[in-house]
Image 1 (cartoon, helix red, strand yellow):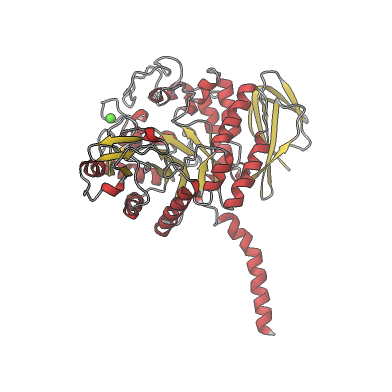
Image 2: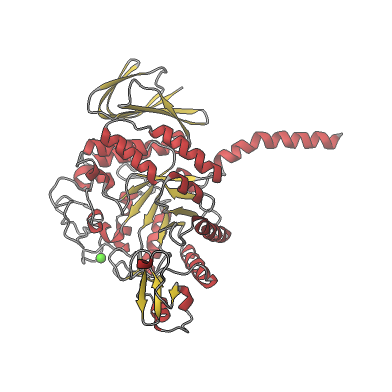
Length: 504
Ligand code: CA
């Protein structure tokens, strides 16, 4: 009898304590993080050669997050995604020649160790771009593999003695020893993931950087390792399981540039994937000045993702280094750029900010011009200013720089700072579910975010015409207002405005 009582008592205790444990301890760090994507070459220079480097980045880290809760002039991001920093023969680094060393233009391994230790001191996590679908044609593995049939690295790549007559024949390139497969470019030969040695090498590379302190990886071309999705998913599953054995809270985010069905498939193998369709939905809604069903789409997507992974972390963003910059997509309209930010930074998911987005930098393809030097001062003459390319969009003295925007409380930079802080201070904005609130017409977008007993109402006016929104509840706390007047039980919504309020 006594035993039964004891068991019942312990069971009740567990039932009471488990939700508490689950709601605090069990949430992976990346679920409520805000990421910032950095192209090192364009960010900050330390040695006067005008090429961004790791020492320069470390010197400017307080711009991103000082690590102090009280500081007001930092962005307060939680994590950094560094675009490729390994040895490479290109300006962008997506063709690696040595996976164990830093691009000499960016510094040396010791600079990376200093950077990661300064980042961690401030509570900033660091993930690296891992580009393993292919190597550079100048990688020693490929040089050896292509020079001899008997090279130990021959089977690291995909070879055919005759030019294949089936499939995408134009993706095969000739060397004296045969034809090799290269999906993206002749100088980026694809690695052969059917070779267990290649899988071992890739695991070894990841382990090396985890031991240097990195917190995760962004997986370049995650759906291109094989033609078939199921084979890619199975490989990433194997990779993720291996890495979790080394570092249980490792974060992996896949670049699966595809529709929501394909992205959902990859959640079988990966904890996080970039949400390309959502970014298009947000941007077209803002561009067209009407909500095209953002909340309905998110909830529908989240149901799809959840089916394959109950613990999915939806990586949301506006634009990345492969796409025209968001403000340029709005014809340079700064209010629309701020509105788009106000939308995605109040949605469920893990937001990724592309460097320069927060100061309203512009850019359109070719790629170099969507990766232009970050502007620290308006005259672009400060010591940390990079200038590896002559900018076409973000010119000196155009009024857009950290220095100029910092002083203007209404600037896009200060909106990003406020919106990120709203997310930090209100768990519902970072972790809560989302439910649509009906509005008079689709030029107003409203939703509630829920978490525990916290309830936050977010309202955007997507139109340039003033609008109103009737509040059903009393406002408990005004979290963020931009171009909005709170009048009794009504919000007067100015052009492209946003209100975030706490309700009972
Ligand atoms: Ca430099």
